[in-house]
Image 1 (cartoon, rainbow, N blue to C red):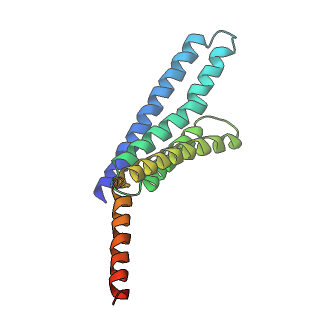
Image 2: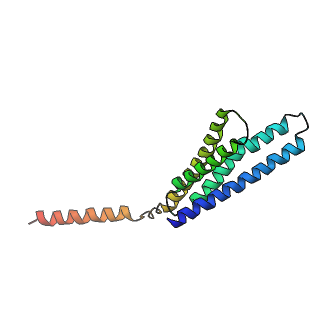
Image 3: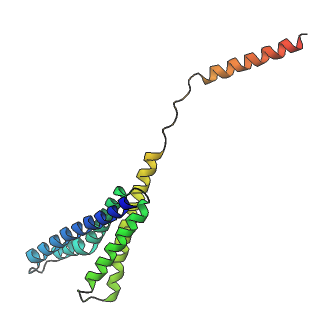
Length: 160
Protein backbone atom coordinates (compact mmCIF):
# COMPACT_ATOMS: atom_id res chain seq x y z
CA UNK A 1 0.00 0.00 0.00
CA UNK A 2 2.82 2.42 0.83
CA UNK A 3 4.42 2.13 -2.66
CA UNK A 4 1.03 2.92 -4.23
CA UNK A 5 0.57 6.01 -2.06
CA UNK A 6 4.05 7.21 -2.91
CA UNK A 7 3.42 6.51 -6.61
CA UNK A 8 0.28 8.68 -6.52
CA UNK A 9 2.13 11.51 -4.76
CA UNK A 10 5.02 11.36 -7.24
CA UNK A 11 2.53 11.20 -10.14
CA UNK A 12 0.72 14.31 -8.90
CA UNK A 13 4.04 16.13 -8.52
CA UNK A 14 5.06 15.09 -12.06
CA UNK A 15 1.71 16.21 -13.45
CA UNK A 16 1.96 19.57 -11.68
CA UNK A 17 5.51 20.00 -13.02
CA UNK A 18 4.22 19.49 -16.57
CA UNK A 19 1.38 21.92 -15.70
CA UNK A 20 3.92 24.58 -14.71
CA UNK A 21 5.90 24.07 -17.92
CA UNK A 22 2.76 24.42 -20.04
CA UNK A 23 1.80 27.54 -18.08
CA UNK A 24 5.24 29.07 -18.63
CA UNK A 25 5.07 28.31 -22.37
CA UNK A 26 1.61 29.88 -22.58
CA UNK A 27 2.76 32.92 -20.60
CA UNK A 28 5.80 33.32 -22.82
CA UNK A 29 3.67 33.12 -25.96
CA UNK A 30 1.22 35.65 -24.52
CA UNK A 31 3.94 38.16 -23.65
CA UNK A 32 5.83 37.64 -26.89
CA UNK A 33 2.96 37.63 -29.36
CA UNK A 34 0.13 39.09 -27.29
CA UNK A 35 0.32 42.61 -28.72
CA UNK A 36 0.11 41.43 -32.32
CA UNK A 37 -3.29 40.77 -33.85
CA UNK A 38 -2.13 37.57 -35.51
CA UNK A 39 -4.27 34.51 -34.92
CA UNK A 40 -1.51 31.87 -35.14
CA UNK A 41 0.22 32.55 -31.80
CA UNK A 42 -3.15 32.89 -30.08
CA UNK A 43 -4.14 29.43 -31.28
CA UNK A 44 -0.76 28.09 -30.22
CA UNK A 45 -1.21 29.63 -26.75
CA UNK A 46 -4.72 28.22 -26.51
CA UNK A 47 -3.47 24.77 -27.46
CA UNK A 48 -0.57 24.95 -24.98
CA UNK A 49 -2.81 26.01 -22.11
CA UNK A 50 -6.20 24.58 -22.98
CA UNK A 51 -5.74 21.33 -24.86
CA UNK A 52 -2.16 20.09 -24.78
CA UNK A 53 -1.65 21.20 -21.19
CA UNK A 54 -4.40 19.11 -19.57
CA UNK A 55 -3.62 16.10 -21.75
CA UNK A 56 0.11 16.29 -21.13
CA UNK A 57 -0.08 16.80 -17.38
CA UNK A 58 -2.73 14.17 -16.74
CA UNK A 59 -1.13 11.61 -19.04
CA UNK A 60 2.38 12.13 -17.69
CA UNK A 61 1.33 12.20 -14.04
CA UNK A 62 -0.95 9.19 -14.41
CA UNK A 63 1.66 7.25 -16.36
CA UNK A 64 4.30 7.91 -13.69
CA UNK A 65 1.92 6.77 -10.94
CA UNK A 66 0.80 3.66 -12.84
CA UNK A 67 4.37 2.75 -13.69
CA UNK A 68 5.71 3.19 -10.14
CA UNK A 69 2.75 1.55 -8.37
CA UNK A 70 3.00 -2.05 -7.29
CA UNK A 71 -0.58 -2.99 -8.20
CA UNK A 72 -3.73 -1.64 -9.87
CA UNK A 73 -2.23 0.71 -12.46
CA UNK A 74 -5.61 1.89 -13.74
CA UNK A 75 -6.81 2.89 -10.26
CA UNK A 76 -3.59 4.79 -9.57
CA UNK A 77 -3.77 6.55 -12.94
CA UNK A 78 -7.38 7.59 -12.39
CA UNK A 79 -6.63 8.88 -8.88
CA UNK A 80 -3.92 11.11 -10.30
CA UNK A 81 -6.17 12.20 -13.18
CA UNK A 82 -8.99 13.02 -10.77
CA UNK A 83 -6.74 15.03 -8.49
CA UNK A 84 -5.37 16.98 -11.44
CA UNK A 85 -8.94 17.60 -12.56
CA UNK A 86 -9.66 19.11 -9.14
CA UNK A 87 -6.60 21.34 -9.55
CA UNK A 88 -7.87 22.38 -12.98
CA UNK A 89 -11.34 23.19 -11.70
CA UNK A 90 -9.86 25.08 -8.76
CA UNK A 91 -7.78 27.10 -11.21
CA UNK A 92 -10.90 27.90 -13.23
CA UNK A 93 -12.44 29.61 -10.20
CA UNK A 94 -9.79 32.33 -10.52
CA UNK A 95 -10.55 32.90 -14.18
CA UNK A 96 -13.97 34.38 -14.83
CA UNK A 97 -15.23 32.08 -17.55
CA UNK A 98 -18.51 30.46 -18.33
CA UNK A 99 -19.37 27.34 -16.27
CA UNK A 100 -19.55 25.07 -19.32
CA UNK A 101 -15.78 25.46 -19.81
CA UNK A 102 -15.25 23.37 -16.68
CA UNK A 103 -16.32 20.18 -18.44
CA UNK A 104 -13.57 20.35 -21.06
CA UNK A 105 -10.58 19.97 -18.67
CA UNK A 106 -12.42 17.21 -16.81
CA UNK A 107 -12.76 15.18 -19.97
CA UNK A 108 -9.18 15.86 -21.06
CA UNK A 109 -7.65 15.04 -17.67
CA UNK A 110 -9.63 11.87 -17.14
CA UNK A 111 -9.13 10.82 -20.77
CA UNK A 112 -5.36 11.25 -20.54
CA UNK A 113 -5.27 9.33 -17.26
CA UNK A 114 -7.37 6.53 -18.75
CA UNK A 115 -5.02 6.19 -21.73
CA UNK A 116 -2.00 6.06 -19.41
CA UNK A 117 -3.66 3.38 -17.26
CA UNK A 118 -4.56 1.25 -20.29
CA UNK A 119 -1.02 1.51 -21.63
CA UNK A 120 0.48 0.38 -18.34
CA UNK A 121 -2.02 -2.49 -17.99
CA UNK A 122 -1.12 -3.73 -21.47
CA UNK A 123 2.59 -3.41 -20.75
CA UNK A 124 2.25 -5.44 -17.55
CA UNK A 125 0.10 -8.07 -19.25
CA UNK A 126 2.67 -8.49 -22.00
CA UNK A 127 5.45 -8.84 -19.43
CA UNK A 128 3.55 -11.48 -17.45
CA UNK A 129 2.65 -13.66 -20.45
CA UNK A 130 4.91 -16.72 -20.47
CA UNK A 131 6.91 -17.44 -23.57
CA UNK A 132 5.56 -20.24 -25.76
CA UNK A 133 7.25 -23.63 -25.49
CA UNK A 134 9.64 -24.51 -28.28
CA UNK A 135 8.12 -26.55 -31.09
CA UNK A 136 8.63 -30.31 -30.91
CA UNK A 137 10.45 -31.40 -34.05
CA UNK A 138 10.22 -35.14 -33.46
CA UNK A 139 6.51 -35.32 -32.72
CA UNK A 140 5.56 -36.97 -36.03
CA UNK A 141 8.23 -39.62 -35.59
CA UNK A 142 7.13 -40.42 -32.06
CA UNK A 143 3.50 -40.77 -33.16
CA UNK A 144 4.55 -43.18 -35.90
CA UNK A 145 6.57 -45.34 -33.50
CA UNK A 146 3.58 -45.48 -31.11
CA UNK A 147 1.34 -46.74 -33.90
CA UNK A 148 3.82 -49.44 -34.90
CA UNK A 149 4.10 -50.57 -31.28
CA UNK A 150 0.33 -50.80 -30.92
CA UNK A 151 0.02 -52.82 -34.16
CA UNK A 152 2.69 -55.27 -32.98
CA UNK A 153 0.81 -55.82 -29.73
CA UNK A 154 -2.44 -56.45 -31.62
CA UNK A 155 -0.75 -58.89 -34.00
CA UNK A 156 0.87 -60.87 -31.20
CA UNK A 157 -2.47 -61.28 -29.41
CA UNK A 158 -4.39 -62.44 -32.48
CA UNK A 159 -1.79 -64.99 -33.67
CA UNK A 160 -2.33 -67.39 -30.84
